[in-house]
Length: 397
Figure 1 (cartoon, one colour):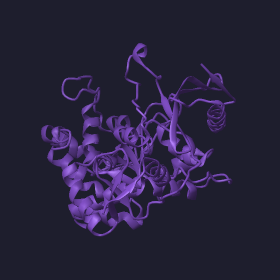
Figure 2: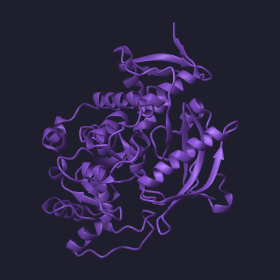
Figure 3: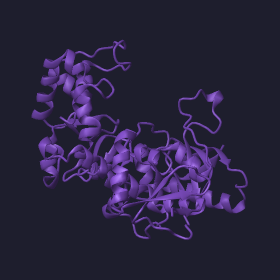
Figure 4: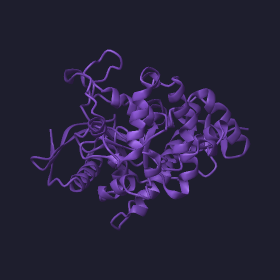
């Protein structure tokens, strides 16, 4: 007989699996604390919007409170690296051990042209791609502009072929990056990727599958590993949730789920109010209550799959950055507010660095929420965030 979970129990499992039910450390967070977050969520999405702070810093603040973002930068930018960048759930930071698992879902498809047309530059300009590869491998980590300068290549302003104002060198770099032939040694202060040869990025213990594709897992085992990471990070999830975590095709996810169910790692369960099959991870915590309080990045892994948070939290959330200002409902850069086991509201935030103020431009509460206690908790979280960002005040409106 299939076990049933109440919707409240499923929410608590999801929150706990994401590390948001754990009390923030009383000590100043260390690299070990940041590593614990990485181990819990599996990957952290990157985004260039900087109206508040770069999005990859926020999931660590949500789970740890005030911490030194320089620690995270060093985990990504200095060896031995604890984080590397690749396309997983969009552009993401992940442990080096996860990078080889993306060979089948992304790298091989980038090489054969079945993933986003990334092979076009290699097909049309193989000599350029070879020159770019050789230049990246031969030198220190550099940005696309630095590689262009080294090759004496003029920037293209044509938008006809790709839809981006990228030079041919930039296209070649991105093809090689997607294909797993080069990597990233971090980002500049301007958020430009610093391209590097694999040998410059990989840690010694991870070197074999990084540098020798024949040492990587077969496709089915790799998909199982990726689904396993997503299942642990979800606690309880649907097939769609598990596919979305690493943006995998459902046809690859289904046999991986079946294998994990057969091994006893996942259990089919029913969740109150849902007509879909859910999968409970064998190690998922099932707390009777959670005392979470966090403002969540729009790209936080608890909320990035919108159908999931609608099913579990009855919370309709859409990012309105690209919506014309007069058509926005909640604001430009809106962070959901998690309190207890519910998403109780959302706040449009901006770091006004010139004035030293964290501006809560608009706050929207869910139906039945927004009472005095909710407002006190939000005010405390905003004050904590302002201090972390080096701002001296919080202002509404």
